[in-house]
Image 1 (tube, rainbow, N blue to C red):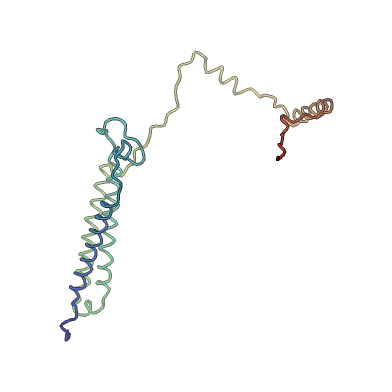
Image 2 (cartoon, rainbow, N blue to C red):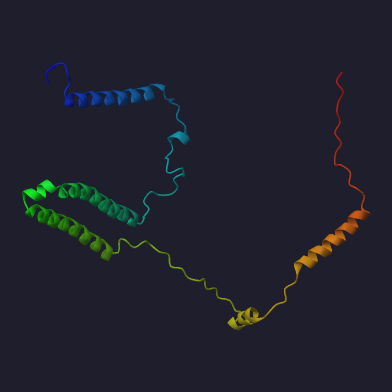
Length: 196
């Protein structure tokens, strides 16, 4: 740095941080200054996903979703650590400098992945990856009708009517009735005033 007026890299970061903090403070100040301050019961009420909170907040809920989300994040972070390892492991200069470098990095990553696999097996054996499944069962209603009556109704063959013929007969009947009836009159007759 020949020019003393030139900013260092840390100076640039400091300026960005100061501008960011200034913008956040200015936004909060303007919101406090401009925002309306009329309270009402709807505005002061608890907002819970667009639903009115009803009942007690001491409700038990199943936390399996959170466990599955955390396991997903764990393996997502594993990928974040594998990418830089793969880029360093693939550099031929390190391998050429010392032949043990390749074996060391391979054993290191095998231990890392092994620990993660052990954690996955533990969570799997514990049953935290199983989603809660409802017990589906057919409803049983105590009815005095014997099962043989249902079986006989289901085993019979029934004659199915051809509804196309029925529709044709009703259309033919309607046309003969409509021919006898005169055309209907309108329900109302609009009246217009003449401009004076």
